[in-house]
Length: 121
Length: 298
Image (tube, rainbow over all chains, first blue to last red; front, top):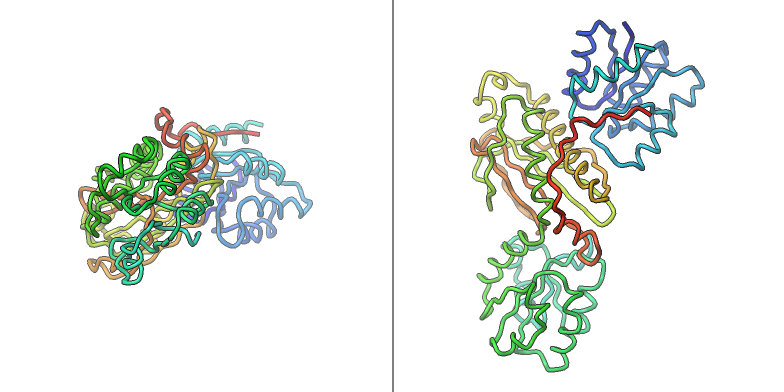
């Protein structure tokens, strides 16, 4: 079981993703924007997975990934959970250290695929 | 938005008086631009502007002006309201007539009827299809037990007190969604929503707007149109009060109201009419694709 950071400005999505992860036995921390996500990560960077939204106030998901990369500490896999499907954003995400892209709407099936890919390694 | 947004009229004492008296705003047109020569008319419609239509009094055109309009008929590309003698109208290019509405004798009521025609005809057919299907697909995912049983309406009839707005921008397109919610009606719908907190309701509304655009954009990507969703914003009023609209821009739009009047969706969409995007949006035979299976591991 792992420790997961969920970052999304939507309470609905944070709740749904967290409930699913908790039901699978994972420990979950959550944040409502990129800046808060970084604060949580800095306090204890030993996460196994980060799932983040892209469009958020204060700091968006790609900006958060760039800031995490700049910390120069080992990072867990980072997955974007977003409505955005623009290839240009995916390219920018990759450059910022994003490891995968999940398009909303949220589904347990999609998260299961993601968890399998991360935790079987 | 461009200052050319609205109607252009030529040669149009009538349009000018409508602008001066503010009558255009009564039929949801924010602005009308009055031009006095055919050259100005052509300049207005050829620019990168969101011109939604033109009113032309054909009887007042000289032969050289008719020729100029005929020569540029293809470039006009948006609905034109023609009024005047039939014999004069018939002398215009068939290409122009194919996008025109013959208003006959000019009257404000004709113009009001024409705004409806313009608003509907300038909302691209492919976008209309994917908008309706996106709402049907996303609504029950964000609001469980909610059926997207909606009607296309001219005006809302529900008593809405929450308004969520979200914009979506891309190269050559601009779109926006306004979701109106009657919180009292929602709470009375079933036990799922009976005790829902208003803060959570606003959060659901914003996520709904975000995901509807996500589904719309996923489909626009199929025809190589890429845009980006902005952050949604929400406004709250007193339950049952309904919104008092004090000012509205005219934009090509559709309005979909749920049969139970718990929610209403107005989706506006503007695209450049002078490039390939417009043709793609109106001629695509693609059907709606749900973004369900989209997961990509880099």
